[in-house]
Length: 159
Image (cartoon, rainbow, N blue to C red; front, side, top):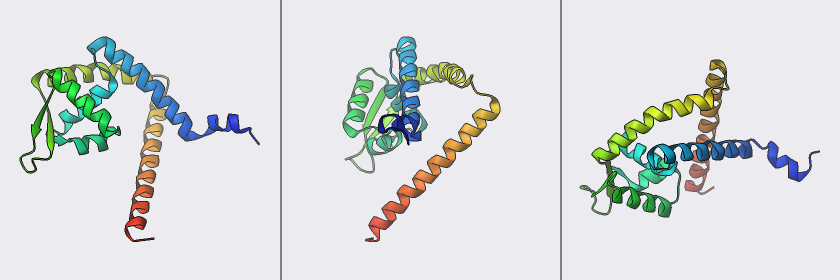
């Protein structure tokens, strides 16, 4: 039986988290050097570009960061002239987010460079391995979503 200290190194969740952290740190350094913006800021901008008018609530769901962190990022990006906040037309309590022209231009440039970065990260895998990895990530994600939904359904039904 492995010792408790070594067993954490074998957990898939730990290994995936470590890989994500390493990837995010490398990408963040790259984007900061190239564009003066980190990965968190870039994700906010990219999602605002994908869903013009998205709300802070929706952005939190997509980016998986705390509300306070998202709020600070949005404020900073608006001050930099990359993101525009508008009061919701349907609900004045909502704030809708839109890229500015400068934000759109920056996002377009980052996608071009991001494709190069992505290829570099995946270059150690064969095409078949990339496809297998993609399928595995999809299956694991779907299973976790289904599990979370079943937990919510149990709570909602009072079990």
